[in-house]
Length: 236
Ligand code: C5P
Image (cartoon, rainbow, N blue to C red; front, top):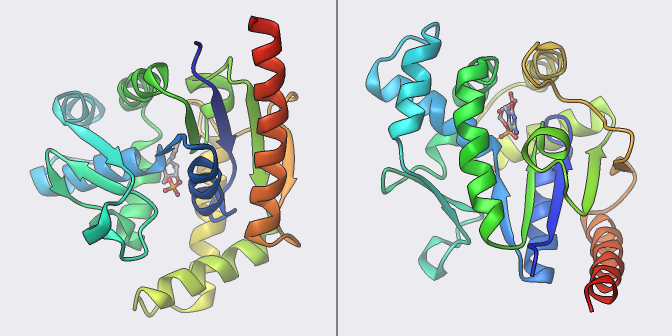
């Protein structure tokens, strides 16, 4: 059977992680957070003292790194959406700081880094049914995904959510700084020459500004089930 792929793109803090994780859980699919891979790259650069300006060195680091993601096991259920392992080290929380957010957007500008990460992502999605979220999933990583979604929300709603998330983690950053960082990161993601964030025409646009997480998840699960049934009738 061909794996079923749900590809989700969207701007910072649109709710992609939470929604994708829950949809994956409902359908029994693997949830893949590709942003975590760009974050791991920034973390690796910091650990190895690599220059953020050296594209080739960064791509080499990524090529050699073992990047794994799995659903959190019983000891790991501390609010994380996924367990992220870099060369066997649990970096699930270490990559979630604002410093790593900025670093990840910087390394994401480099075509060589993207190429290596995209191949890793495609290998994961070739082996099992996935819900994969990021910025270039609908057109670069999984261009033939059976369901493509552009998940978004207004700037202010997203900044408020991000601010709350950081506060919950004990990171005391003012709202204005969070808002400014979010706009800056969106701008960088949408205007970079290498695979910018964009809305492909065939994507289903889900705006979560006025939706609860549960409502967004319900809508997506319902649509996925219809498409899966349809795919099955076509195959039999
Ligand atoms: O999704 P998250 O905010 O964790 O992603 C961190 C950064 O990684 C994004 O701001 C973006 O620059 C980059 N990214 C990307 N392509 C993806 C996923 C993330 O460029 N597929």
